[in-house]
Length: 204
Ligand code: VGL
Ligand code: ZN
Image 1 (tube, rainbow, N blue to C red):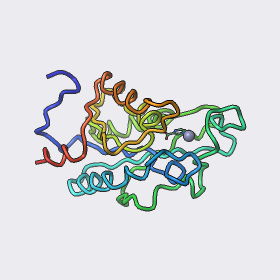
Image 2 (image 1 turned 60 degrees about the horizontal axis):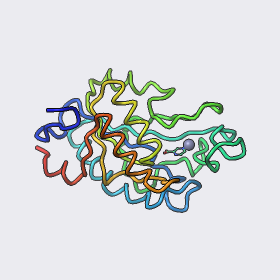
Image 3 (image 1 turned 45 degrees about the vertical axis):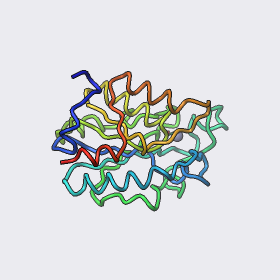
């Protein structure tokens, strides 16, 4: 069985963890950096959160957590409007996202002079996951073509198996097709790509 063509008969077992990427108000419709239909990820993610929580498997939530003068903001010549400034409502997790109380929250992008799309960049996520015995990550959230993409690629690089939750991600699509290209890149790098419904059908 090649990497990426995993056995679906072992869904949600010890060693699995759910990683929810940047489901924050600023990335939802009406937010400062709205991802089209970004709120559509919440319902499938809430279902996955419930499945992981029921099985006592770890739930991790990353958040974009920028200082006001972050280098990715347009006023500093960066590509984005100001967004997810640490401590603001825009940086808060979506109200409708039902994160368990023991969710491991990973903040990233807090260095004013470095962009950090990946939840592994400048954080202790790798070490913490390995200490918890995590081997496989189920990844969903925002945005497919930035933080989900780089988090998944770094996870593979760090030796984790990765399954991207296809119906629980949405792209910014600064360029049309970026979302599907990102899915393809993750798949080519070794990630499995599955819908949450397929996972539910395959669950023990
Ligand atoms: C993101 C753009 C800028 C993301 C973060 O979470 O995908 N995108 N900062
Ligand atoms: Zn950002």
